[in-house]
Length: 132
Image 1 (cartoon, rainbow, N blue to C red):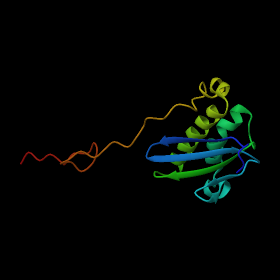
Image 2 (spheres, helix red, strand yellow):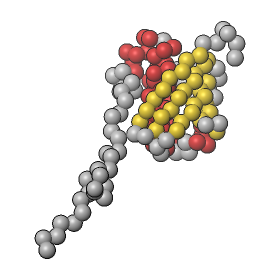
Image 3 (spheres, rainbow, N blue to C red):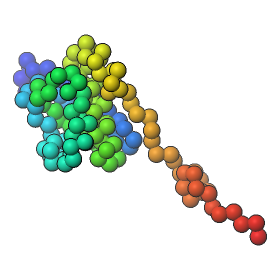
């Protein structure tokens, strides 16, 4: 990578997934954990979720992405990558924030799995009550 290319990195989280995105100007190649984008996210809805910030900002196929995704499932990782990409785009150009924020791309979804409570079989489940 030459000094002239501008590189941005950002982190995104969703459920138990964390994604780290390194974005640099290029031809639009996306690798996730060393695998091609189409191979990692096989379904179209997951691919669209990741590419949505680029489509909103009209910057499709302008950046190369190197992504590291950990934890959670594919849907959580797709949401985490979407947030990280949106954050990296705002670092690239602050004016893009006005386009991305109303669509909810810069909002971290706070929904997480509820923790299991001690002395109980699950988060909400209770042992069966027996009067006798």
